[in-house]
Image (cartoon, rainbow, N blue to C red; front, side, top):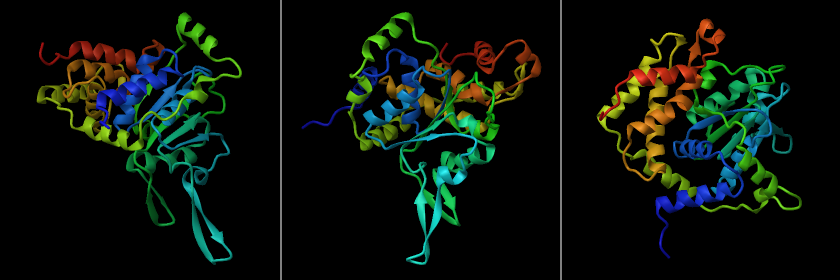
Length: 315
């Protein structure tokens, strides 16, 4: 029995996701890029466009363990990370792990929880571990948080602080499907049949780890590395931006570019990979000025202007 190649594994994953998710090819590519980068992703969009379904499908087809937390104002940090429970029969405390001890964690409507509960995710998102009662426990590998938030329902929400946003590899928007895609959704999803129930694992968790390791070895030329750094540094001096991207974001952009190149069957990064990832990787890390906000200029729009001013390597 021959071992499937990386391209065959990636094709299997894309085809399996397409059995459930209609359209949204760009979002699927970004989600797979985040998975190969072992990075977290924030999906911001209106209800009903498939945010939860996309996360669950990714977990199922990759054979990874999946858990979901519905964030609410009364959610406690221990509901996220776990708690030490006293066992009267043994006379000792036993650790009851929380839902963060999984491979893919869906943090649904993350901005509805209080800042104290939101901060419970900080350590495990960055350091891949949970410290409780002086004991540090690693979370499984891989560990990817897929968080969702609704941009239109502002009542009863707590905006994510900059420190938390900076831990997300990228933020994506799904948007509404095209007319033809929406017709296909209505055709597929009818009782008692449901495409989501028919999907199963097409790869193993070991395959995901091997793909991630192979993606990390993709070649990044010196001039493209400099291009990545320049893109990040330009955000700190661009008009309309009060706070630019952090050095951590430069590392994330470089790593994500490697994963995207690998996803597209290349063992080297090209400038198009970087340009494609600049808006989703850097957009949520920027703090725009009040004037830009009043003019309706979001971070993504300013980033497009920045890219036009930076010489592209090889041109």
